[in-house]
Length: 147
Image (cartoon, rainbow, N blue to C red; front, side, top):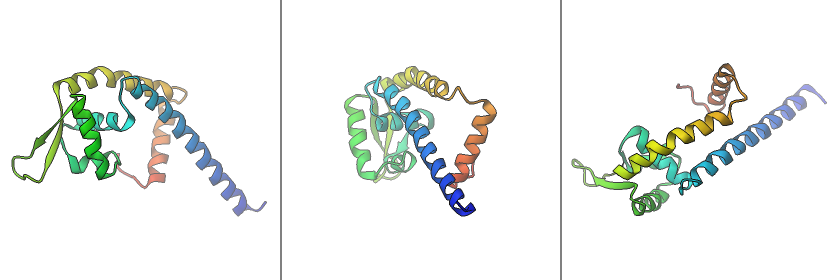
């Protein structure tokens, strides 16, 4: 096997290992979220609103990588659960914001630290230095260079 073939084979192994690692962490995360009666997309919206405050509906999809048509459906579901409320923008009637309700805020204050701890534990086989190195490598692969 020549050097080029070896490098291609190694790249394939990296992609497979990355995929397996992603799947493992996402399975842990999704199981955690579902334990709270939420699906991963609902949790993603709640987590965004919890950490960033109210957001225009149009921007939520971009920030959590969700198609714009799906945002309405997810927000509807979260409104039915009384976790999110829509608020019209005072300056531009075309813009609608999503905001956590008091119940949504309380839920996230309760469950987010537990979820965060679970994710931390899922990576406890890595040292802090290894996590920092992995983060830099993943950013390099994704083309994302900001911290």
